[in-house]
Image (cartoon, one colour):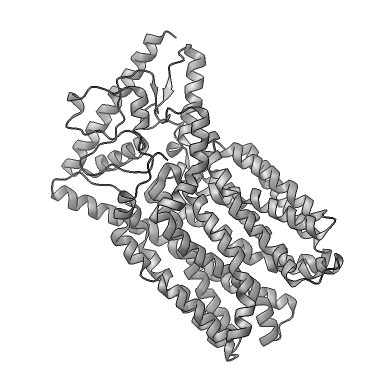
Length: 565
């Protein structure tokens, strides 16, 4: 196809985009609900492009492609008041979606395809955290086999896996934003299975610890990148339910792990724990290899560019989302992105601290529940493992509450704000990330309340169901905190959601690996009542966080916006 044909086609595409954007604006001003929905979808699909003032578009000369690409604001979702993100350029070499209904755009995929991808990701995010704690009941057996009596090494055999979780995200998240999601998933899955098998065949305690660490590194990939994959496919106001199913894995997997691991260890031995995990992960990895598709828009468009370049011979074609960097510069920027977020973004820092606190509390309970119930209530090993089900039931209640309330609230709030701004004659600002945070208010209260109930009922040896109810309340609060802040990060950083989640994963994984080491010594010194009360008081310090984020979150995002992500 001649080059001028490509330019004519691109010009028609740009004209169509201008027409659709103009219709969307008129629909917004007239208050037409259908046009407002179309406007939101147009802007959402075209977001991540250069912001252009609609009153100046006709008078402004189009900028060179490289400038347009470098002006892309990937961190912003919808445009600010008075701005329109249409990404229109007179350069006929720019490649973009073929209209609002382009089937290559993951937002336009059929529901079944989105569901398949979500189910596969959610299953993997359940299996890899399952491996973190399923091994715990077998620790006494392996310590006997390897003739070691070190309690520190026994604890480290379990927690070193979570340290791997703190390492992998800083690599896999940026790589997925460079090369796409599926290829990184598949590489990580192979590495995870290989090192899990190595754990099953470990000849010594030192080698087992090393293999556990590496399996944690590779196992962190679906947890880190899964939220980004879901954000690639599902629009903001419908994302809550999908994210709830994804987020339940990292919380429910470690809870179910000790229950299943105890049974497997008693029946087959500790090595079979790893063989079973490897078999399950192998099946899921094969399904992922067969059925997963690329969801990351910049990579899809880059593939489209290469295809068109081959078909037309026009080497000047480039994606609208191309940052215009040399491969070496793009690689270094991608690798450094999570670190920059963690160091310079107040949103990432505060979310990391709060989620890290909740995550550390969860793993502290993993190390303390079994010995405490065996000592106080004289449970045997099997029944002590079942005490984790309180956390599991609470987490499922939290999932149900958040998945229903989050999307419902965000739709209602967006409609209210849209109506209010239209009455003032202003352009609607779209869905704000802060709309995800109201459920966090409930979670902020439930987390400390659960620790007070759990601690003092166990201290006074009230019937065993009472502390279990306390752990269930902890599970509800923990899940809501985790979900709300994960969603807030995804909505705040949009196309770089995987990097934001990676930064968050590093903080929470380090906290989850370190704090549990102090759990049993703390209970021995303070007792269950005051020990858990101390945890509750620390959690109470974070109760104002939801209100502060709702009020000042937008200010923090815009004032401390990180440049050159």
